Structures are given as C-alpha cells and as structure tokens.
Length: 64
Ligand SMILES: [Zn+2]
Image (tube, rainbow, N blue to C red; front, side, top):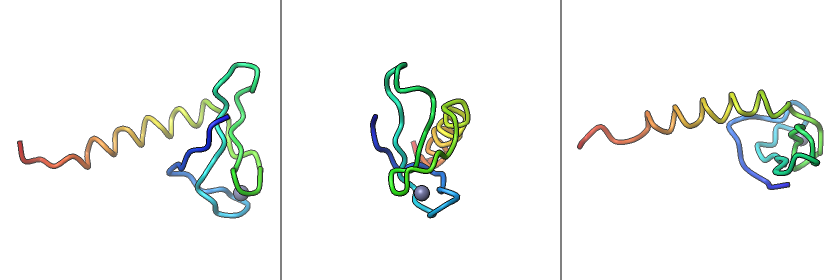
C-alpha cells in the first residue's frame, strides 16, 4: 500500500489522503488513510488520476 493525496474527498471524514494498493494481492480497493472507509475501486481511481494528470498539464505555464 502507498499513501497518496488525491483530488478526491472521503465521503465519511473529508480526508484527501488514500491508501492505494500497489500489488495485485492487495486488491483493487482504495481506502481512506484517515478513517479507512473504502472510497472507490481502482478503476474509478484511474479515471481520477487521468483527470488529475490532464488538469496538471493545463496548469503548466503557457509561456514557452
Ligand atoms: Zn475518511
């Protein structure tokens, strides 16, 4: 498991840090690092991370 801060909010406690599974045997569940509530499945997370990556691209300065 790794702990990361995501652009997601725990529906139970509002925390933004989540434990992510990094091995297959850890399953696909992402859970809140604060209250351990299951937040979402890795599939949803992948979507969230893709959206994050896209939005961080947009944050790059336009001056080149
Ligand atoms: Zn929580």
